[in-house]
Image 1 (cartoon, one colour):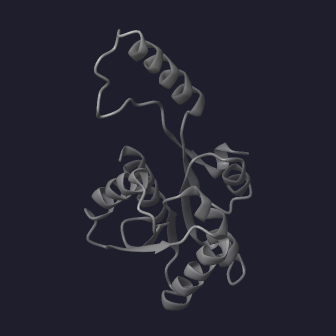
Image 2 (tube, rainbow, N blue to C red; image 1 turned 90 degrees about the vertical axis):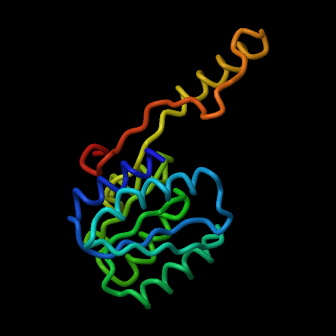
Image 3 (cartoon, rainbow, N blue to C red; image 1 turned 180 degrees about the vertical axis):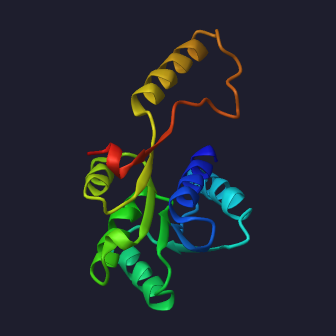
Length: 173
């Protein structure tokens, strides 16, 4: 949820507190996406000038492209997009780039995959929320070993947290 809050605050910092934002998520409704969405909405709903629309799509590149094009046709003045699943950001930037200068849009994503970092360096997305996969792996193994040895029972049902941070395009250069 905090990841969603962080992305939403970054969008407000870059774009201001008025405008329309399209959130594009998977139609599968994965838990992590629902949590991100709740965090985003928690922040953006506090701004009277912000209009937020949630759009869902299947996860194939073709379906994401079709969804983005439908939104571009229906909402041509919208300049802000948040890809709630990282696989969507590249397609969003690609489809926008076929019609407009992608640099004129605010595009945000999650996860620092190689594709996302490339898009960030090319300034095709404005920022992403980077996680700490190595720390996540170390913490997971440590907790699993402690659990198996009976040292750490029960595990916290709220989960365990590792560092997340916003990475802007200028930081990726």
